Length: 394
Image (cartoon, rainbow, N blue to C red; front, side, top):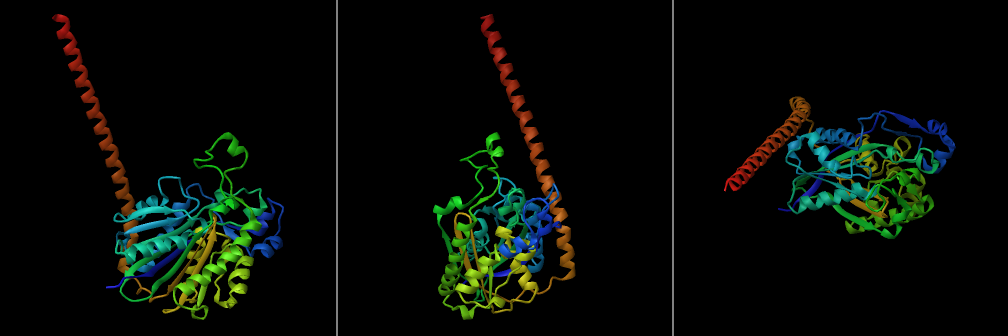
């Protein structure tokens, strides 16, 4: 039987704190008018609690997606987290999410393709599903870019926001779902949008901190030129690859980076109707890998997608990378029975207890093993002393 990968669940989460353009005007030389006319952004959500991180935002979005799909965490075979701001270089943020969800059957890994990462992740999930290696895959885009931004640099601090979006892709026999994808990269432009320090090439030091090398650096004009070209090209290519035309596409959900980029590429170059392009950039800013799944969640909630509709996701990012995917929207899952909702709500605190138990068991075993090793060392010492005593007497 042929296998098709369909989106069966979706969800999003953004931090509570809202930072408006007027708020930014108090700390850098800018204004609401300057930001809106150049980017289209009015406000963004920013983490402001010490315990908030990329993984905590991802978990909230993941739970919403599971609830929408009517699935327990145990149904997941793989969790892919696309992010440019992971909790740590390692372990993978996806592993932290997997543990928090209690998805004990799932593999987990992070994907780094900057703002294109979510669409890359969708393509990876599709490949796992149609090849039979997985039946149910969660793809998450999550960022806390506010912790990588130089808040004294008005060219970058006004752009980015924090948030997370998640989808669940599942194998079905019905045709449709994920129809085509286009993935690309041009590493010659890697220096145009980068976080210079913190990796193996430029490890953290007093000098890197002093120079601000742990903040996002961007050549805005060069990225703008690249984005306006590649967004249009990737959209055309993925539509042709699916054997369709732009007239067959009901909705385009672009990466929410800048309204001028969206207008110049998707709307003007493709001559695509503005009312069929979903934009929520004004309320969230550029949330990088999270922007497309957040926009998808809002588009569904607003009734912008119906069964059978064709939707294009298209984005670009540091690398330089670009990606597009074309999906035929399927039937939504039936509402989750009340008893299942309560069961799933019970499952998450229970999974935390199980995780704590596994940690405790690991520590107890390590302590026991350490005692056993010490006992072995003591036995060897006794044997050595006995041997020496025997030699002395002889």
